[in-house]
Image (cartoon, rainbow over all chains, first blue to last red; front, side, top):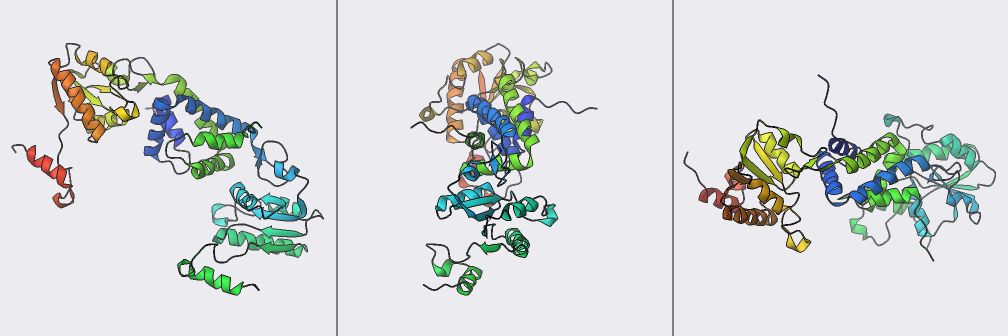
Length: 200
Length: 200
């Protein structure tokens, strides 16, 4: 016997389950909420999804999400072309922008090396990063990948590749977070902060 | 100065925040996941949303979500027309169906009385429920609203209205859950189970 085709309500619940972190109960609650209380919002979300899928691509220059060929940041000619900051995600890039402490350009990997999940150098576009970093203008590449195992491995791998090509490579400092009480910081972080101590 | 129009990525994040239980961080993570790893899923969700909004309406008979005028349950002529079970949501109706212990019809309120939130008798379609319950066939109305304050108040209100009209009204039994150890059940429930004790 063939499976009965899903009703549009069932199909909506199934599709909502595609969202990360949404299980069957939440999907049902979301479907119910949209249909009962916010049909306008459901249509808005529907349009936003198809719109984003058709319009959002990757910046040819820094690989972040953008709508044109080149993103706004890469088009900003007032930035310091000698600095290139490498992040894992657009969200990480945002955080660095919010510090107002950086005025160079970016390269967004859209992931981190994770061979077990099938994410190798090609999947995070290292060929393009190398090309970007060796354009003759970039003097320093700042590795701002995360401090998870994958982030560290990615930073190490990229660092080695760039150093071979004579590019100066730096890594975000590790240390005690601003505002933290020492006794509540994990020992590894304090050890790192001791090793990386600086003249004050 | 006018606000800059949202990019399609920003609009997607804003729209995802319309989903219940989704804050800015989750919305960003969802948008990123869909655009980076599951564009097909994003389109599927987009279609499911617009499809459901255009097709899903309320059953003219029992008020639950359905695609035609009358839902499958109400069209099932093998059911016992003397029984009408009142639930708050389609999910509650599902649970009762799953028990296989009930073979009558339903009325789904799509909510519960909550005057402070602006949900009065009209919003939960009590006029239609009264009409449905006084069709001459219904002999007993089973109130299966929840046991929250709102659910109890709703059951009480509906019960009074129906009793005035000479309809027999029953309420789901309260008591100790199946499989529960007495010492871990809250005192109110045990008290209720004592009061409602039955001959064995």
